[in-house]
Length: 301
Figure 1 (cartoon, rainbow, N blue to C red):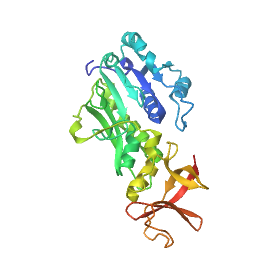
Figure 2: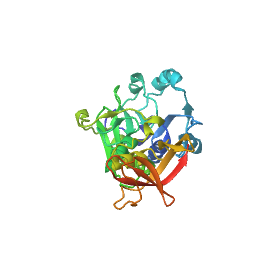
Figure 3: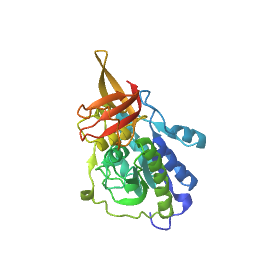
Figure 4: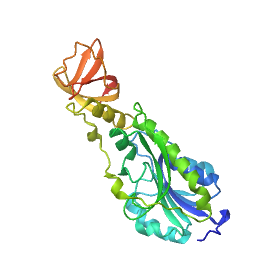
């Protein structure tokens, strides 16, 4: 499509989930883009649902939507080919879209990723950024290719990561950054124009998904590493955990919140004994560098 595209002619098929999906889909609706179809996920009963619902937004707005299991996703191709949308968007949709799907978009297939690409390509970008002690992240709209998060950058918006932010707090910021990134580029997209900037993969790295067992605390690590792990996977994510011997039995504890490493820890602590210790009904964690975290919120799992 050329730059003579007008507002009434712009259509989109949207794959979306989570807060990012709701924010970005609403942005398209507000811009007057015709939403031909929305594909979303059914909520997982085993997952803590703390985020907004794309399906609910579709129902409120009268948009056609479908929930399609991963194994049946390929059956959608003929419908996409028939719709032949100007844009195909993926906003925190959890499945990789087949390359044939991308080709059904007349102008471009675009994905919103929760990092400042090329950094933190792949899964769980917000959690990885917090785990690594980053002070900045953001959201990137980019061209979709067969390889994940590898296409040209279309729009970016950055946010700060404060030292006391946990992953949920950062994700909330990133969701708003995604909305901003969409708003920044919409005037171009409405004209059928897609600004592109090279996504130099050599300047970033690819990260895989995280499993609950990745939250196990290694007390031999430095205090700041353990502190970052605790906030990177704090609830509603599965949480950082350790084992504590209680009455002769090992008990798993989720450590949901900790202080920054203390400058003046209690003198009663045995700093050579790594792991959890209790002094005056307060819980502390002794780390591999001899520094101490106070555990502010914990519970048995």
